[in-house]
Amino acid sequence: MIRYEAVTKRYGDGPPALDGLTLEVPAGETCVLVGPSGGGKTTALKMVNRLVEPTSGRVLIDGRDVASTDPVILRRGIGYVIQQVGLFPHLDVAANVATVPKLLGWDRDRIEARVDELLDLVGLEPGTYRHRRPEELSGGQRQRVGVARALAADPPILLMDEPFGAVDPVTRARLQDEFLRVQRTLRRTVVLVTHDIDEALRLGDRLAVLATGGRLEQYATPAEVLARPATAFVADFVGAGRTLRRLDLLTVADALVPGRTTGGGPSVAPAATLADAMAALLTSDGPSVPVVDGGSVLGEVTLDSIRAALRESQVDVEVDVEVDT
Amino acid sequence: MVLALLIAVPPAVALGVAAARRPRLAAVAVGTAGVIFTIPSLALFALLVGPLGLGTAPAVAALALYSVLPVLRNTVVGLHEVPPDAVEAARGMGMTEAQSLWRVRLPLALPVVVGGVRVAAVTAVGVATVAALVAAGGLGDSVFAGLRAGDSTEVLAATAVIAALALTVDGTLALVERWLRRGR
Image (cartoon, rainbow over all chains, first blue to last red; front, side, top):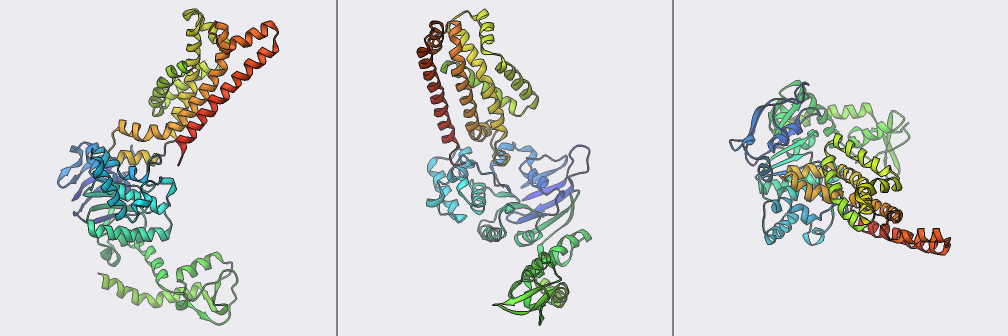
């Protein structure tokens, strides 16, 4: 269990980066710190392993103030994943994963067995990947090695700072799925930082929404944040993402204006999402995008027709949200 | 020449490590080494013959002094070029400062440091030739003997050997550098 007690961080004389944060992350849960940049998310995360020290207040792990533990010892017991992954480019995958076990003085056989176990866990076949170097891996594979390295010494706590930020959306979605799968079996206490509300809603058992200036606006489950945003800031932050998510759920067919089209430029298929249609609309020169199915023109999509489709589906979406809650 | 490098490299690297995180020390150290590096070799020999006498001692001392700048500068640059995320990860996983230096920062800076040693070694070959003037012997003797006797064959032969030596040293260290950079 991790507990923040009235934690404030100030750099110099400026406004606080984190302002009186109090919250508790129950053991085995994933707490996502989410919000725009300047909200103190990373600052809060780094206080758990003392990469940042609070100006006032304290951070407790299982009731014990982290300030009373030697930072080097503390960090060896906490998994840490950063956005740029920070793999050591001069070491192969196995040596990277073995970093903390080596610092802890494990014997070689135990380290080797653990490395293979972890590579299996993150979906990298040990025989193929053990001796690869980081530069021979794709972005997604590097992230996996980063996660394996953080889990190597079996830490009860895992800190993840934008862990899936540096990969393409398809890979990100896959890594998120795998994170959920791994976390379902391991049940670590995870603090994860992201600026992406969709990722937060997907991965978190609880969300801590932080506003610029490091103020905690709401700390609640994803369903509650969606259904009952505590402040105008949360409603706004979640709201923008909500509309865009709905565009992903609707198809071009929902907003089709049948008949001829005046639009040129990019076209979309009826099965494409409205998010795709919106993107096409934004990149085209005209006010409409032709809808084409296997060479024949079915009609067009316009901003008005997309808006109408969103309004029509409003009722369904609200029902969905209530079901979630 | 090898002796001069052996004398100069460890303190230059140590100074580079110390200077890498102290910009002011780096400026002073690189500046001083830079001034030494720009002193013409003949003048430096003349200065050193005073306290050290003629022979190998002033030659080795001069070569060592010249070697400091490239090694020091490349150590500082090499450590600065270590990816910050790797250093951050090392710290976040509970490495002490010393562990981070030996296991992460120095290994990653090593190819650049070797690049500095390479420059120092090639410089040393050239300067060592002139060291014949302070009675340090070596291939420079043949060059100067040839010049005095008006024997252009001897001068050319000696020069060719010196050039070949410089190229060999340069090529060997370039290979070491490339090997250290493999997979990056």
